[in-house]
Length: 194
Image (tube, rainbow, N blue to C red; front, top):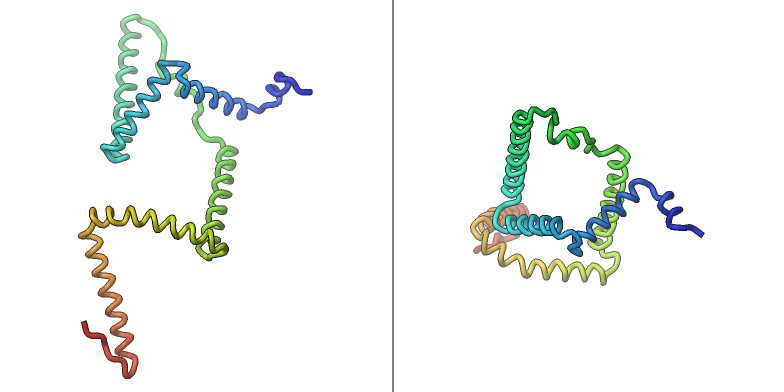
């Protein structure tokens, strides 16, 4: 019979990190550390509100600018503090600069293989649905896509009516030209009058 100590020693480092990460997420969600949860919740809410008002590029740019402003200000503050106190504390972000944040090739291969397996599974499922291997599943997809289209197409058309009408006119003209050329080559076919 295995004890908890045996299970802990048999766990790999990555399994222990995942378990620790899951515990941290649970602690955040249950508000066990009010200050940390408040900061994460507030920042997440602010990010979502920002994304509802601005584009994602703008939000990323502003967050990066704010982070850069904070780190530069903190670095200057620590430099002035070291000069005034005549201390040799060194760079305030030294522990982060020394830490390796790179992705190992094993981890990249692991996630790459997982992503490839999911992609291949997706392609296989789409092929099965679009080539109607199972009629019921293909009909479900048809109604699902139809429902989404019915609720999204009017809004999209309303917002981009000018562009859509322009390109629809171009495509319609091309189709009429092709049909006109085909009818001209068929002996005895009368061209349609509009």
